[in-house]
Length: 352
Ligand code: IPM
Ligand code: MN
Image (tube, rainbow, N blue to C red):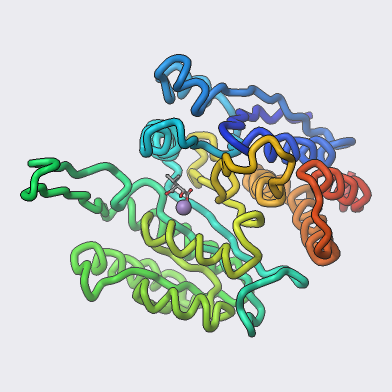
């Protein structure tokens, strides 16, 4: 038997509601297998900050490090100043645990409402760099509040950081049927970082002769994502461009309620963290209205990362079937979770 030590950060707003459904499905998919889950809840987020002024202490971080994976709901609340929890908790976890691959798959399931008239067959994955770029906090401001204020946010791109994420993206492209990789950047303007990314893709690409390589400036990429998203297979891009285009990717594939993500350390030296792309949605918190599908898909990514590929497949298949058949009648958070858990329970195991 194998025990997975799972750190659970339910967080704020709808976080606890959607995480409950994710855990429900996780339990069901592992039922009758020789894998069990040992969960540790972590009290992190807005409530903790209000009570203690703490976001993520060294002790929290060391305790989380002892786990095999993290399931995170959502972080953020309007009662906390903007940036405090984002930087002090969410980004701190991604940076401290060296989650350099922020994996964000987008698939348009049959039957899903999309704002696109002719979407085509949409199935791509964005490999967003997770530890560098403008997110590192390398910047500062002088003469704040005066007409002469200068505010800098410096995008940090290292050869080491770019190469490792580009390698991961090529490996993913190589493993997919279409074997295509698109670098998204803006090297006509951001010449320093842009050319580092371009040269790195060229160099690593030489090791992957079967992978077709393509380049788009980020502005043009947004046009293609609306006009012809089926052209994308694997996209590799920096932290901020990746943040922006993955919201667009979610919008064209059924919305943020379906968008899952993994903050992954491919070297497996730290626990990877799986979370829905959506935020804490305080306006609908506690009403059972949130769609837990994105969290449940994030659980599938978690299972995949842990090598439980059959279990992951059963969750993905259950979601695909549910989405295709869900229709327009509104369901509560737990109704969606129950429906997916029921489908997972009846889906046949390949082995065992
Ligand atoms: C996301 C979010 C975060 C990000 C914020 C909340 C820090 O928008 O996960 O996409 O910018 O990465
Ligand atoms: Mn975002």
